[in-house]
Image (tube, rainbow, N blue to C red; front, side):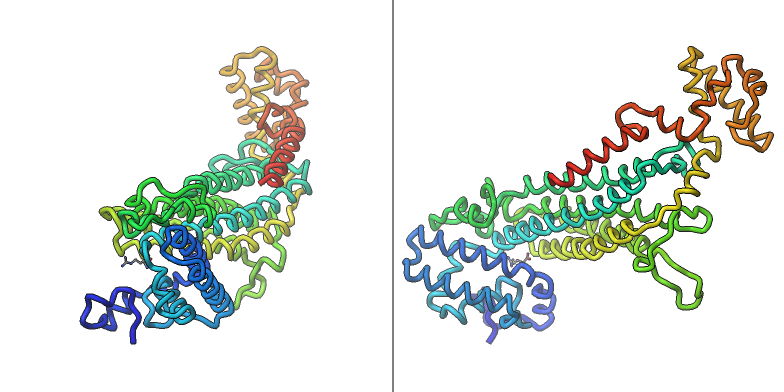
Length: 461
Ligand code: ARG
């Protein structure tokens, strides 16, 4: 017969469609190891409260060990009759400990405080895996930085050539945002470090059970301060969904650049064969699918976040069954990221940058015009006048179909008498990059220092 956890007041079992709608083992089974860890901790506080004897505790823990082994080996799995992971594991325990002893474990706990606790535990472990995967991507970016300490490219704003920058500076900008994502997950973890176990269905437990002892055994620093909040709140899940969606968006911005850089028109990079795909009809194609899937999955993670927020927005306190919808979105977000991390890290680590072409393009589009203006300012010319003069240099060079450094001495002084031949010192990409030497700037020495700080943050993380 059916082993529901709530049969007593019901004359009949649930309709088939009711059971099908209700079932969650197809996704919450991954909480099983955490559920068993919670049961061990709960058994110990039942003993402390005098509700189990030493011998009963011993037998209970042994049965839970056997159950844990059987779950791990796949010998014990949920059936279609099991409503959720908690129901299935209760059945598994009764089969192993006997109904007399096994039936004592449910005292003083509810699936509501259980699931709120186990979900936090699963997410905290997932956050550690997501951090590790993110650091692998940062590693790949920093390896490319080390490989190209001097390479330059045209830095862009509005996707237009703006000012020359070091390639390493650009790659490290992406590393900075990914390390902030890591920081966000760490901050989130500190806020999620409270165990709802002991909150019961919503009102707490009357049986003298110690929530702090359970919390400590399950790796939490404290138990929740409020049992209603403990069972009803899911902001920890929404915040996690945001942190990983933001991470996916940051990965997507890298991916978008790789896609553009890989076009024939840009020609900045060549993808390694291992991280590209071909076309079933066009034999010449080598497509940046890793980057495109990254961009695509970022949309999916945004959807998981907004879907979860919509699930939460109209729920009164405390627990409602709507909350069963809280898990799949974040499980999915983590699953997608775990597919992405090794592929993105592999794609970035094996990119070939065409530094000759990048160097050629770096000064194109008059990217050194700002350098003329700033050089004039250093000669005492007001910036308004300097900006005007540099703009005129661009106009003259453009009308002659040439570059700024090809303007003659006569042309320069005709534009502004202060434009002596010494201005040529900043009319090279190397000169332009070298003079942006304040903290955070693109001068090679600053970029190398920045990379060393990033490397330390990765190794300390
Ligand atoms: N499976 C449920 C969930 O994931 C937990 C069970 C609570 N069910 C209940 N009827 N109180 O939220």
